[in-house]
Amino acid sequence: MKKNQQQSPFEKQVALAAKQTARVHDMMQEVEYYTARRETDRAYERAFDAAHAVETLCLNIRELPAYTGNPNARHRHAEAMLATSPVQVTFTAQGWLCLIIPALLPKKGKGGTQYIHDMLYTAVSAFTLGKPPFRFTRCSLEVRHVYNKARPEREYRDHDNIELNMVADIIARYFMDDDAALLCQRHSYSCPGDGDRTEVFVVPQADHMRFYQDVVLGHGKGVVLHGKRQ
Image (cartoon, rainbow, N blue to C red):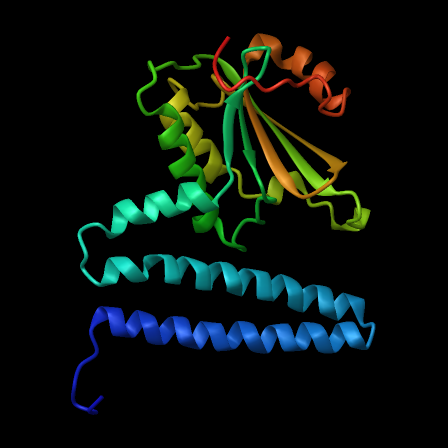
């Protein structure tokens, strides 16, 4: 390309994605280096940075088709999100709404919140399409942060520093009359599991103690997913 020839928006995004790809490659080499030297703490920090960089790269690559100006780009993007992002939206046997996100929510100000927003928004939109509308008036948002049981306990994060507002906003838009504090309580729990995930339940406020007994004290064994409201 000639120096005086201006790049199109698409070409700029391609160049940015290429630069980010090279950055991820360099980070992974550092992870491999520190892992080989058994410097676990440094390897962990660089792995976390690499994960963040990959999420940023993924977001930019997802947006690439839209920069071509193709009118079908957004529709195909939504289809791809549904096919590749296994967010589960369903109901429990108790009639509670349940959303299972196959990732831990990032800390505030860090991590790829936009990626989680996109896949959650797409999944919820698809779940509600063609269904009769229903709304929770007075409810509790019950959030289980399920950590891989191999994760050191010191890595369990402060609930106050986890980005939950983005998830709550999407749920409120589709399933709540209002997410004001008096109408929507929030409760968070941490527990070990077979992998990292975030489980978000929307339950009537009157069912909060039942949820605590069935799910928290029962370690999730009291939940049966139905797929439709009972």
